[in-house]
Image (cartoon, rainbow, N blue to C red):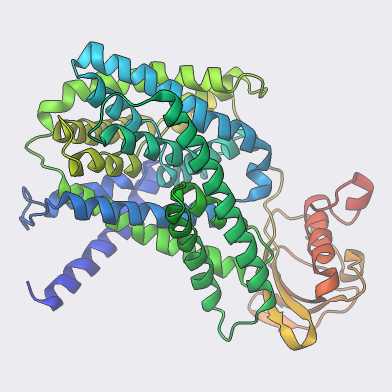
Length: 494
């Protein structure tokens, strides 16, 4: 086909995918199903009859898309929200993942009749939850912050150990040495985490001190640093997936200029990566081969959902004071998506025995159990008697550097449920060196007086020196949460 036809087809697919996001959002489904459906529709069995069977290219493009999706997940994750849950998430994403692999691997051997290597490869491929699916569904549910934080962090962390296991089992060697495998995993995870943190921290320090000539360069720089962390970690034979997530997490929560714009850009890139990835995986699948693996997929899928996931959650969260309702919801909320299907291409590239069958089983499991779990998560939250402990939506603050003045211009948007509503300017008691210079209300702007009351929906322009910027943001957050008497309530805005 000519270039113009390819461009038209690509634009049409993206627009269809955007419409699918809206429909999936209303139905409570992860959008991956709609995207994969588009891929199947234009694939070898669809009207367009597009042939795509280059597994090596699919693996490369799939891993690249996962890097961008993980970067978006890290940039958009609120560290304050997930920090208390990080220890539990680390245990669930390592020890819990190993427990799940053992249970599913044994079940695949006994119930499906697979040899030990394909069985445990299937178990490893299915072990990680999917960041894109988790973020797109769980962020819409009113869940306790420690639970939603654990599930978000788990989906960002658990790709790293699983990739190591899948690559090891796909190698044409004998039985892997478990002690050596655990040692490699420990090194790769620690080194990947260190590389990601170092690049994220150094990148944040540099971006805070350099005033770039255009605001659009900051999002590009943040995403480039995150992708660079993957490459640097891979060169050191450590976990690139963990490095990219950690670096993006550090950068996304650093005091950088134009943070909302950076998050918006990262979300756009993440959506585009998801669309391309899932459509490609739909193209790669052979619809004629999928029905034959429905029964094995249902057997393995129900073992994963009803036995392996609950056992791994219950055992790996011992000591973390999660209620039984939270543990049961976490068991049901282990959504699978692009990650297992992409990982299933690794054995195909390495020509592992039964690799094509594994891919078909994984594809069926992702489709069937996404349809089962996604729409029922709100019901599961109600049955487990879960509700959000978030009281007030956080302020949205965007900063632009005023380099020559050694100051920052903060753009503060007041959410509808903020306690800033009705507070007069002088009652903010901002630190010396910070001042509200302009208020934008209902499309009109004006210079406020000390007695000007703020309203929900206002946008404030606050000029602050570098020295008091942190204190200014903390004070604004404190008043937004607890009102003009925030200090009396012990609210510090951290």
